Image 1 (spheres, rainbow, N blue to C red):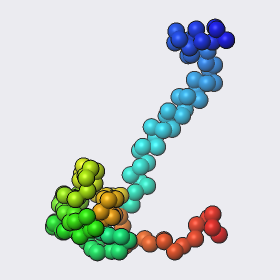
Image 2 (image 1 turned 30 degrees about the vertical axis):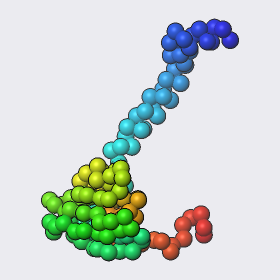
Image 3 (image 1 turned 90 degrees about the vertical axis):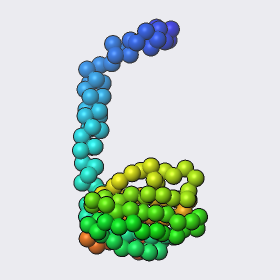
Image 4 (image 1 turned 180 degrees about the vertical axis):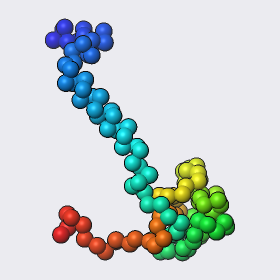
Amino acid sequence: MKRLIKDLRTGGVLSMATFMDKLLFFLLVALAIAGFSFMDDLLPAGNLVNISVDDTTVYKLYLDEDRVVSVKGPLGDNIIEIKDGKIRMKDAPCPQKLCVRQGWVDRGAIVCLPNRVVVSVGGDKQHSHAGDFDAVTK
């Protein structure tokens, strides 16, 4: 036990790892890095923007139309800007303004949780699967 603690203190962990341990570690790191290249494929690209407050759609807009809209939520108005095929939350009444700091997006979503405003981008039509069953509930 004392030898194990001494090896851990002196950086001898790699000397204790077998070839298969090192190979497994390398493969896991390579798989994690390769996963980032597929992230763009997971988020649907498109030009339809759905803006909702409390799960109620208030705007359906397109990214090819530059404009600024104001969306009223429980805390106040969120200012949303569309420009050059991207969208951002320009201003929000929430305390930390994480949605504003997210910046410009052209896919995925921007969420202002305190004000219950959701901006989702993707596809030419919105996919609503709220009432569908999934593999677990079938």
